[in-house]
Image (cartoon, rainbow over all chains, first blue to last red; front, side):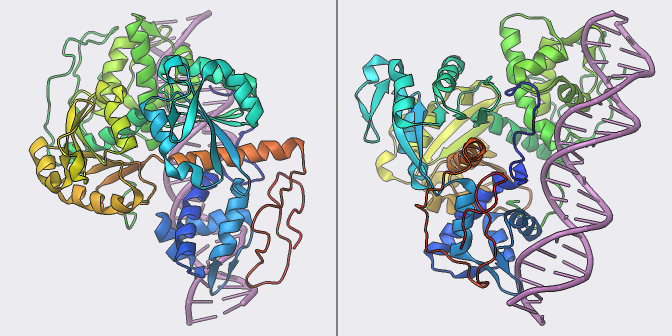
Length: 258
Length: 258
DNA sequence: TTCTGTGAAATTATTCACAGCG
DNA sequence: CGCTGTGAATAATTTCACAGAA
């Protein structure tokens, strides 16, 4: 468990449910687009469509922030942009460090949307001495020996880990020791952090595996038989003797008939 | 939901809750690590710790798959690896295309974990003619004119979109028209897809914004005043006159006193 | 009349706690 | 005994549906 004992949901801040918090950026993006098109007001229905949620959910979400709409009219775009930005803490500037400047780290450094709203790449850090000084996205890479100093000098509280899996936990520990309290982890590892540190994870292969699950289900729906037989055929139940390992599809009854 | 009208949860397949499905890859990774260390069995407690969840949840999750454990002992690592792999559809091979070979697309193509388990990068596609033929991660980039043919020739059902935001929806439409039914979207856009197509989204700036929210909350907890004043100061409520706009922090009353 | 804001109901997810198998 | 599997209890989230402001 990333956090030790479940203390407080660690999430229900000011009463805004975590699920709502996770959608605020979505609304904000849709609103920003409207703002750029100089659209003055928007209804919950329209905004919900733009954000890909349903309007009841959106209204409920907004109700946690306050009563920012006008009945019969909708929401003032600019005003709502500001309110959500403030709620998300984007009216201030967050210096961020990226640790691990490989393919992915470099891509992140170059990612425009990164810097766009409230976030600023304060430093790029890599363990490879050969990288040191080399500019990536216009920012010179610094060696990880100086990690602590970089964090402190820049007042960084958000760190992005894009190292290989093996390096992630040590890097995480150093970041946390140096004062980082929020971590975005791209390495395929479960990070252990002390209480009070937030970790969010972005994991490509997990997302693909979830898609594969649903994909398989779809396939099994139309063609009930697709038994491939190519799996590790010799796998047997440890305790029990044999029983039928069923094919990969949908609604077939038993899997382990005792 | 990216899908228009909510039809069917699109998610509750074979009765396995979506939240459980989302954790199976986590368990699988932890189990694979154990397997590589030749650990024969593992208790729910140990495995849960390795996966970063609590053991009751893990047991409940596994109970949806069947009774794969042995009371008093634990779970057979190899057997469970196989069962979860099969459940996730990873005993078969999923050809994947990546569309948009910029920084991120290239990083994805190079990402090892991608190919590692059940997934194979069947093709890289980019709209830039200058990219065509250039190998990335050992795979020659193909031009997007041939997208449909590539999908069909390779029997691709999973597509990864790593294009700029503006190109994402058109690319998505073409992928879907060509037969792709699962999409992993890295572009910061809400994709609209027909019913039956699954979309998962990976969005760096959304993750950062969620972290910023919690970060701000932490800051507000110790120092109630951090009023920056740098926000769009001139923003006023559209309809109403004043009323109490509540402030950004925890439980402290007002910060935006009209 | 239109569209927000929100109680209440429905659904989904998590956690508890313990019966019972090995 | 130890540890799984699971009903039952609790919590979180989503959806419904409608009162009421503009």
